[in-house]
Image 1 (tube, rainbow, N blue to C red):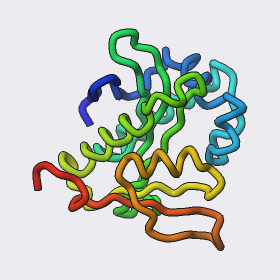
Image 2: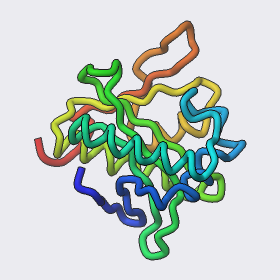
Image 3: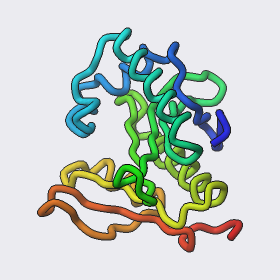
Image 4: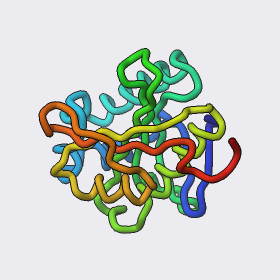
Length: 177
């Protein structure tokens, strides 16, 4: 992805080390941490978050153009309101999985769906992904509703109903083939 992409209200860009404090507002929120993967559940200090962001930047550079970690900022004010990530699942595989997290103060504005949709369109139209998945805990109703607002449909369940898998395909999106 170019270093920055924009939607109507948001700017999506790679994390920078100076974003550590804003990243903590997203990842360390008690309302967010129960839904995070194990590697993010323990909120680090600001210095620890800065190191994590640098590690993400190094990983993103090494992995290539599709996978990565992005900050979501409001256009104009430039406040970081959330985060997006695309990962190949399984690692080294061909399937892209989208994850997102928003700071609680940014909930209810449609930011996650807007930013996620922009990243999905980029992955499909620019990178050539045939489909993008989201793997969500069934109890996270906000995330499930967001996946649906992005145009994703439930595809299956994993792990004995521990996760719900949503998917959006190239053919579900308008635009270039």
